Image (cartoon, rainbow over all chains, first blue to last red; front, top):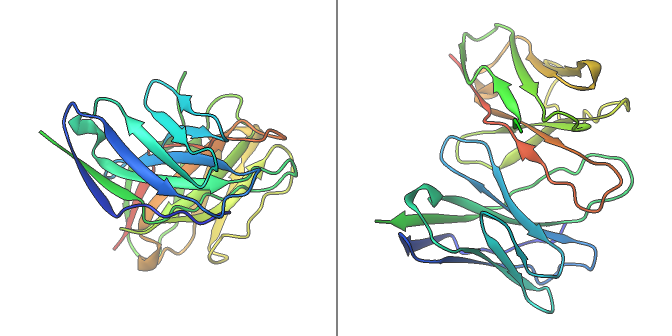
Length: 114
Length: 116
């Protein structure tokens, strides 16, 4: 799976949009961009994923650049409960049966301030 | 619907004791993963079950670790003769799969194991 680069930490004011960048310059054409987050002492939580089109769900929006070498996760109205470590992962899912082991990098520690 | 559930949420045991950790995947999910996460560390893959196929045990750190999945649903991870280095959060994830291009893994809350 392609390597990703994220800032170590970010701060955002409550109620504002939190924009978390991720660089994945070596991404290949069949690799998806996934975002998970992990709130302290909880299991990882799936947020969103995409291939090349921008995606939006009830939690967030994912903006992928046209060359797919970077993406941005947007939390439109951040709340204190969004304080967590956010992980950007790129991975391919093979049609061959086998474990698709998730590997998290260091992620971005996002702190939402009141 | 209900997410992945795990029990117990916390387990404190003495060195040398055996422990069993349980995972209930999302109903209908065919694939199940066990990971563990030590304090401040990333995910460490342990074992993977998919349908009736032989499990991928390549991540189990020693023969003290074993897991089974009965009836294609509930899974139990067993650690025999626990050691202090086994202390970690044990996470279970399930996914709908297979043959699809993007299969999202949904995680349970984890079991925090502390070996004294």
